[in-house]
Image 1 (cartoon, helix red, strand yellow):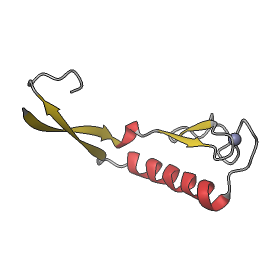
Image 2 (image 1 turned 90 degrees about the horizontal axis):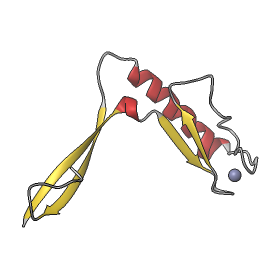
Image 3 (image 1 turned 45 degrees about the vertical axis):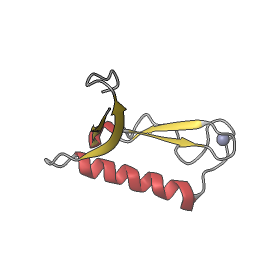
Length: 96
Ligand SMILES: [Zn+2]
């Protein structure tokens, strides 16, 4: 048995869609961080119409949106690396 570690590399640009799950009704709102014109209102749940509060949702959505836009317009490339440990009996693993 061999222990293998792999990394899932996620380019920062691929983190384009931010989902918010409403704490009241569990509906999910997805915001396209790269598109400012076609997004649902990020300040209110589209199902139960409860407003998301400023401190716990709106400020974070704004911060993430600004970070995404600034980071993706630089000439440098950012990525996240997610470690994944696998225990494999054979070198071939269909999840790799
Ligand atoms: Zn809701």
